[in-house]
Image (cartoon, rainbow, N blue to C red; front, side, top):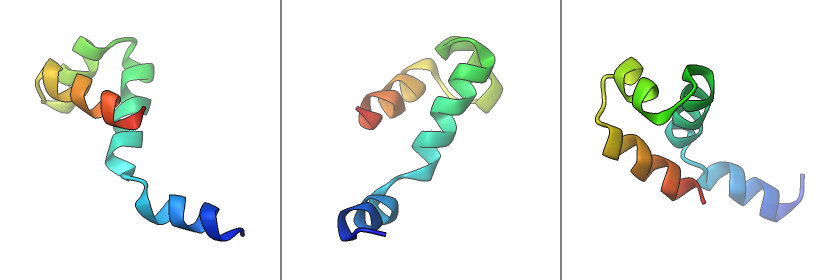
Length: 51
């Protein structure tokens, strides 16, 4: 594995990735927020941090 790939994996917030997956599975931010028992702005903020 290349050094930059290894750094990426260590720096990745896996909770943000999980949030993205739940949004896709649930078909939207509002449904994902309800599913995860979080507010819609919290989910939106998590997605923004993935950019």
